[in-house]
Length: 434
Image 1 (tube, rainbow, N blue to C red):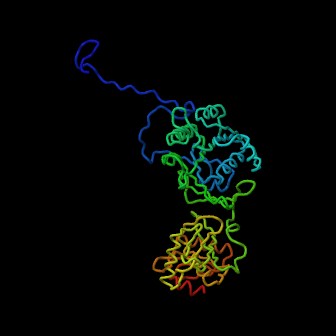
Image 2 (cartoon, helix red, strand yellow; image 1 turned 120 degrees about the horizontal axis):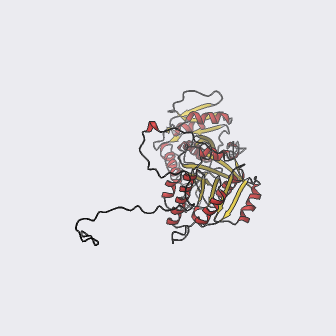
């Protein structure tokens, strides 16, 4: 309109922008956020602060988080159903002394949680249990209790009444996680969110959920095995190269300080097809036992099966053995298994896989004091792997006396108690072993 309806004059209307009312957060406001607008500051003028970390009472979890729980952090824990996510978080809640923990469960009743707590046999501390799925009512309890740590199990079960969609939908998960993120940042309270995963192994819900949180922890393992690995896929407060190793027992999850005790079988002297590889999980060296079985194909069509190892890489290594070394494995069944129920993607496993296949094919057992760490290329060459000195030191510590490595690895300091066997090709590896 160009004409004012009140005075009848033309070109006297001026547009004025009215600021919309600020949305009140679900927890009723914040304590630390000021209304003063931010201004740009030079990087060198920003004050450096050391993050104060709270010990979680779990050595492996503290290692993965980078030294402890950071106040105001939002941590997302994902994993398969029944893998132990709720057990791990309940153990953390029960081990806190002098810290008030609120455990919000949208999947279990308080009586079920009490039964699990009795089985874990942990100290009760100041853990408070709330069985609720409405975000508004959860924040009503948070305002009343004023907890120091909040654990939500799980984010997919929550819903906010501001939206009409069902719990677990993309919009509900995003809005609920946003409310907890605002609460964590404004009140400096660490919040743990347990998340479901899809059949593809991705965390259910919008991808923005993983962008919003500060830390994404993935709990991996096979429910039929006792072994669990906790790894950080994202960490704004530390490295993502650390892993935590747990053993599932009747009394809950127990940290494994020496993984070789549970990963290596006691007697490997008379077993053909077994070898040990010094692999790396992040920056942590681990001994992994590789088991192979080669037999004549009964039904005419040979089978290729791998557990804990990429079956496409297994087919590649079999093709290299047939093309470069002359082994007729095309009419034989080949089965490969990584002991302990874990999955390994380290290329250093190649030499150990090849040695296990050749050992089973020849029916000759390898020395129990021999280990491997080398990659195999398509032309049959044995390639170097990263952090070889760390692998050698761990093998020496575990009592191995020989180790097969690539001839092209650059080693600055040679060990005293372990003999290094340098190979450059797969056929040379076969000659030195058999």
